[in-house]
Structure formats: structure tokens, C-alpha cells
Image (cartoon, rainbow, N blue to C red):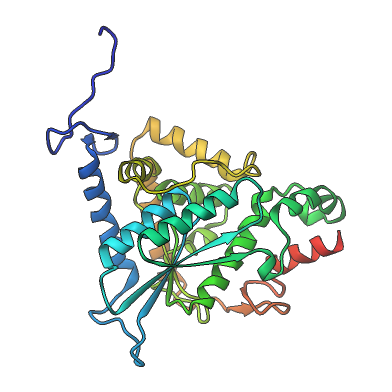
Length: 331
């Protein structure tokens, strides 16, 4: 039919392609897309996990990898890839877990899909709610935010994601500690990494970008190092792979996310990539170079503090989570 778009064959075989990698110029079918992603993830596992041939501890217990899953595409692909690549090793135990933020209509269905995925892969699944770790449900936090902003200048203009991000980090740390994890794996993709870099550059906060995962080369005592095996995989490729593999994933968006700075950065990164394919990769390569130079200039680690109220690791006397918790209790 005139004007109809022709479906391109895979650049590596004659199958119908499901995705075009603009930065590489390749059309990929489902099988070769999966192979491409697996190869890149396997490389990052070797680089970030630092696993010896036998990773068991001296007492014979396995090396434990905690995988934070949410029911979304990124963590679903992360967990399935880890199980596929290293899940058969007897010296390793993979454990998954999901944080329940308390968001009606959003978290419940996604949590059940996360549980379904873990069970289908025969992986232990744990959950923890904000109430379990002493915070309020996010739906209640959002209701209190206007009055908190009026009474606390530091809270004025904050978006729900500012609170949720802090509480969620605490929750993931708590889950990793609960299962005695050696490392925790997060599903941050290439777009997520590029967005974080742009957000930190906008604020002039190079130090924060340098502290982005992976952390295995620079671990903090008392905290399981974070690894990000999907950090070189674009979001579109992860989505296409998850659909092709039929992974159980939740497609809804958080109702509190609109207006967040990350949503704005998402648009900026998408525009950059459209104009100059490969921009996301360039930003992440730049960060790796900055991280390397930063380490050479600052060979001595910054002093690590513990929050005076909760004991969690922080750069301040009172951590941001405890500060926000106090705001909620006062209002």
C-alpha cells in the first residue's frame, strides 16, 4: 500500500525486526535483541560484581545478591537476566524484594506482578512497606505536603518524588540488610543514568554524580554495594525485550510522578538522543571519566557519618529521611 511503512528484516538474520538501534544502525529481531542485551549485562556482571570462581563465604554460606524489583519492565528484565546468566551457580543465592510505598491503585497490582515474576523464576521474594520502617504511606504524605511546605522553608516546592526517593532508598537498604545481602542490584537503565547525570549537572552537583552506582570498587562499610547491570541498556530496548519474552510487567505510571524534575530530564534526554543518537552513551562515558579523575584527585575517602537519630549512613548529622519524618510528625 502506498505510504505504508515497510517492516525491516533483522540485520543479523532474515527474521522480522522488532526494534531499530539508531545509535548502531542495526535492526534487531527479538532473538538478537535478547542476545545483545544479555551480552552487555553479562559484561557488567563481570565488571561490577567481582565474583571469584567460588563466591561462598568462609562458613560455606552463598554469596547473596538482593535484587530490588517493582513489577516494572526494568527490574523484571534485570532479575530474569541475572537468573539466566548466574542463577545456576551453587555458590550464589539470588533474592528479590519489593517496597510497598502505599500508593492506591498503583503499587498493589505491580507488587503482585513482581511476586509472580519471582515465583516463576523460583526466586525468594520479600516485601517491606513504608509503615514497616516507620514512615507514612505515600498517599498520606502527599496530602500533608502543602502544610509541610508552609511550615518548613526547606520543604517548600518539593515534589512527592523527593520524599518517596528518600524513603525508598531506606526501604531497599533495610530489605538488603534483612536478607543479609552482599550486594544489591538495581534496574537503572541507560536513560535513568543519563537523566541523573543531567539533573546533577543542572544543579552543579558533580559529587552526587560521582557517587552514582556501581559502588563495588568503593564500598561503604555497613552498606551492601549497589550494582546496576542494565546501565548501558536503553529503556526502549528493555521494554521491547520484556514484551518479547512475555515477562509479567505493570504498565501504569505512578499518579504522583507528574511534574517531577526527572520527568523534565526525561524529555531533555529524549530530545538529545533524537538529535544526536548515542548522546546517552556519551553522558555515561563522560561520567566514568569524571569518576576516574575524581578518584585520582581525591584518593582519600570522605568521612562517613551515621545519622544521630536512626544510625543510617549520611553526609549530615541528621539524615534526610529523619528530617522528612519529623516534618510529617509535626504536621
